[in-house]
Amino acid sequence: MIASPTDNSVAGIPSAVVNLVLGRAPCPTDINCDGSIDALDTAAFTAAFAIGVCPPDGACRADLTGDGLIDGLDFAVLAPAVAAGGVCL
View: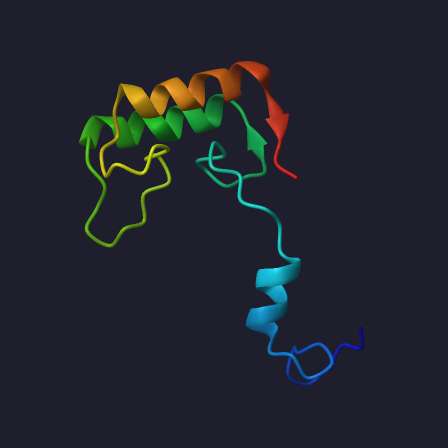
């Protein structure tokens, strides 16, 4: 692919499309988005858990089950990922 230095496109394809196709795969259990699955994600989850529901804007990384709540079901998804540790690819 040929990148354009002026408009951030690749061979005429808008950069938003290129990022969507070439971007990293989502890593849902990396709640704080630092690339690692660790105790910092547990801390971020705990802060969200104290509130219990997702904000109306829909930005809710701690809702790992997608049900609009931050509860024990989400922790059941997070806990094994943190225990295993790892890096989001």
